Image 1 (cartoon, one colour):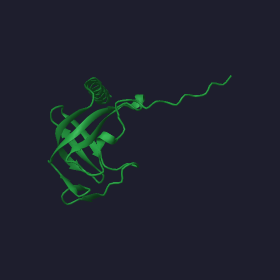
Image 2 (cartoon, rainbow, N blue to C red):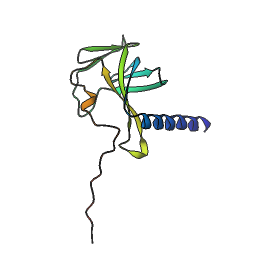
Image 3 (cartoon, rainbow, N blue to C red):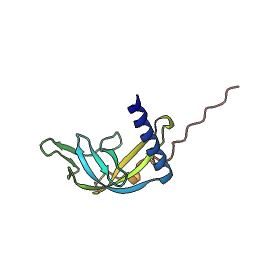
Image 4 (cartoon, rainbow, N blue to C red):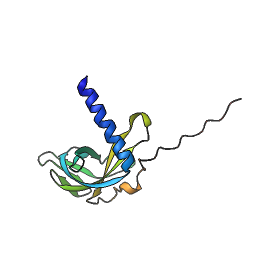
Amino acid sequence: MAQYAQRSSVAFHTQLFFKSKGVVSEEGFVLFARKNAVVVLIPKYGLEGTVFFDSKDLKLNVTFDEEGPTLCVEGIALNMFDRVCVRVSLDSSNLQHQRIRMHLVRPEIPGYNPAESTPWGSPSPRPKKPRQH
């Protein structure tokens, strides 16, 4: 139980830090390549996160090579220990389960632009329910 409390505390304080910091772009390194994502380490913060390349909005050509391991996204190869730049922000669209989100900034991938995606820092407005009398 102490380990669960420690992980929750670290996650909570990380979220508080990035809530006050806002959206930041930082340099990091690719640690792992997965079938649809890469795991990135940001040494400045000691933060590890996942950059996903599949969603219902994005239609990207993603190829995974297990032997490398290498992930090719739209012809751009991402290998282990490659230097990348990621945008780190707090996804507060669900207040009960806030998360740290990462989007790849550099290398630039055609069709994958984090600036055009949903601004994670602001919650989506809820539709108002009509009053019933």
